[in-house]
Amino acid sequence: MTMSSNALCFGDEFSASGIPCLVHIEGHGLTITFPPDHDGGESRSESVSFSALTVSAGGLDHDQLVLTWTGLAGQRTLYLKNPDVIRVFRQAAPDHLTMPLEHAAAQVRQVRQRHRAVWTIVGAILVTLVLGLWFGSDGLVELAVNRIPVEWENKLGESAYRDFLIHQDVVKEGPAVDAVTEMVRRLAKPIPDNPYTFNITVVKSDVVNAFALPGGYIVVFTGLMKKAENAEEVAGVLAHELNHVLQRHGLERIVKQLGFVAVVSIVLGNPPGLGGVMKQLGVELMTLKFGRAQETEADVTGLQLLYQAKINPEGMITFFQRLAEKDEGRVEWFSTHPMSSGRAERLKIELAAMPKPTLEPFSFEWAKIRTSLGPSTSSSP
Amino acid sequence: MKSEILYPGAFPMVRIELAEGEKIKAESGAMVACSPTIDIESKMEGGFLGALSRKFLTGEKFFFQTLRASRGAGEVLLASTVPGEVVVLELDGVNEYMVQKDGFLAGADGVTIDSQMQSMTRGLLGGEGFFLLKMSGKGMLVLNSFGAIHKIELKPGQEYIVDNSHLVAWSSTTSYNIEKATSGWVASFTSGEGFVCRFRGPGIVFIQSRNPGGFGAWVRQFIPVSE
Ligand SMILES: [Zn+2]
Image 1: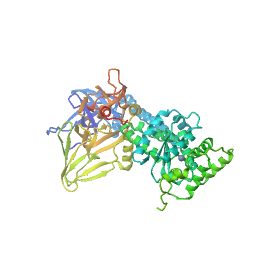
Image 2: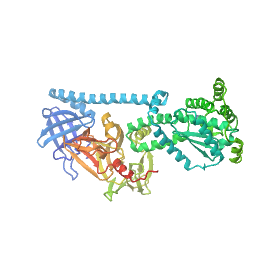
Image 3: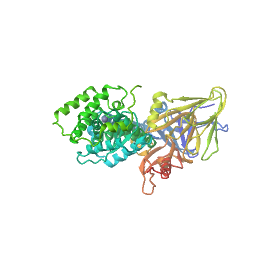
Image 4: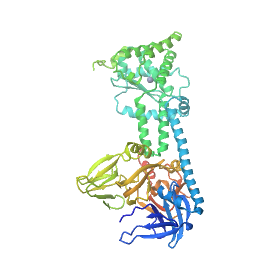
């Protein structure tokens, strides 16, 4: 009863979706059998000779064989997709159809080849782009970063900063805030043409960490301040963080990510996906993981900044060393700033190469600041 | 397998009756309710790689659910997440439909779902991305739209121009070109801005009376921006 169709037939009296039918190829031409109607009619057949046919390629990908003719019932169009049927048709077709058939076949091949060629090129470009952005090709990233205005960077940093602070216990005023504000002011002073206004916030938390967001938003946790034995150690960390801002390390990271994501979302044409991407970028900002090269750069330029600000650069080195020795695995600053054994050593060499710094003391006494933060928490887990 | 559209219009629901042993695939999240005889399995159509490529290439959800009447006959109720009409098509093994990625609601087990790449120009300018779902095989296919579904029937050689953000599905016997909208066309403010598709028959094109991207933009203007 059920007949398996192998073609679609279109005609004036048929619905626009076409009528599925069974095509038989015989010596003289085609026989098309239509399935019985739903209300129990008989199946009908139509025949057409090869001489009446016009042949072309059609359909969405131009990969279907389209046969048209004018029969008793008017204009008929037949769409053949099944490769077996097409092959049998090509073998049986008389000479006068050979040319158009070859033409249609060539068209199909051409479309396929063009598809393949374009996709190969696109694929190659994508892979190059992704790989290029992912590994190295820092020049490209730098080029992109340099084109981003500081105002944008500011907005980006500010929104992440606000999001972060919502869930934090911010120390609004007091000696600790005054002290870090003074440090940042001292550090910012020698920076030539500084486009950033640094914004420092002290957050009450035992986490031993500090971080900088693009645009100059810096957060210091009281945990880090409690761990520091002198003001120069805190200033050392701040000098490092300030340089992440000045060297636009956050942006570099985002551009790398964004480049990758942008390429992917252009291909996917997936605007709702972009929302997720922006979220992901926010998360990425908060994970604060910079590359090793960026860390080294921030260390070295941070050391120079301390020197220019007339703050003893030794503090940076001693703090790094001390944190690396103690509380291994508990100090968050080093989880985002992995301590390679060479890091402090490298800074020592840098420092030795510099002329002896002239120092200016801070206006506050560090011991008092530390006591104002309350007792240091014990380091037992 | 029998299907019935309940509450036709903006908020329809589809009831599908399954005989024992029958199963359907549905977009994950489409199921509203079902008989206790129905088992729900999340199945990756086309294997893991197929599912993965569909997820990444069409942005479609990773899994299709398979709803199987394994413990006796039963029924399932399906609905889409957006307000809009539902249409039930019957695939007969010969006709095939290309479906834009949010257009699929459910299909009989005999319906095959592939993601298919389209040509570069269509991918770049069409706004549906480079990949579409291709529905072939045999059995019931349920599509959903945003707004009402309108069916455009094209005779061989007949042409029709559609704004690409209103496309839901079209038969694979049609062909289309992407064209820059002429000045008379209202440019859609979503992706594929100012581009339209010129379809050429024979075949059927299903379009939706509302544009999801346009609606999104309209809603956004009422959402207060912080600060
Ligand atoms: Zn760092």
